[in-house]
Structure formats: structure tokens, C-alpha cells
Length: 158
Image: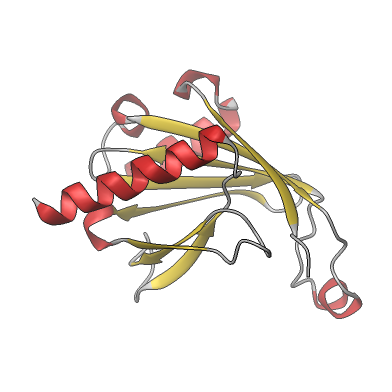
């Protein structure tokens, strides 16, 4: 089984994020009282994910497959939070966040997908869950993953 997505990540300045996505991130931060997430972001990574295979017939009929041929993931690393926004033409913009002290990460199966699964209590959830954060296996994607691992370790050991 091959990869589901071709992903490419790029370290970027917060100011260069699509304004609609930036507004959704700010609204999420206000709703969950995270403070000035755009000003506090230590690292921002934008990942473009292009679906390599069309969802199967059952997934298309039940609308459980990814309907977007392409989507973007924006990951912001803050001193105490990870904020993730996913945007696609059909899915819209979805933002979630997790406190680093409540997060744990695991690598995805490399042959299937690139990125990480972040486990813990995500914003708005009543119980811990796992959320896949798509990152490219290029230099900027792996640098973001290393910085996230380091930040989680630092927060948990403090």
C-alpha cells in the first residue's frame, strides 16, 4: 500500500498565512482563551497535502473519504500549545489546539503517510483523542517535528 498524500512542508511567517485561516485561528484562540497565538508562535509550518488516490466507492457514497483533492495544514508551535488549522475547498477551515503538557506524539506508519499522530485532550473534546497532523518528510516538516518533540519534552519535564 502506497502513501495517501504527497506532502510538502514549508516554514513560514505567521503573517503570510491565508487571511481566512488566520482569522479562524484568532477566533479559536479567543474562544478557548489561548491569548495572542499569532504573536506568541515560535514556529509556523504550512503543509500542502495532495491526495494521491481517489477514495473508494463506499467512502465516496458515505462521504467518509477525503473529498478534497488538496488541503493545507497550518501548525503553530507556541510555548504551551500546539494549534493546528486544516483548510480545504470542501471541508472548510477547522482549527484545534492542545496543551503541550497533555500531548504525546507517535510517528505514522511511514509507508502509509507522513506526519505525526498527536494524542491527548484536544480543544472542545470531552476525552483524549488522536489527531493526525500531516507534515512533509522534507527538511521543514522534519524540523517542525523535532521542535514539537523538544517542546513537549521541555514542558513535561518542567
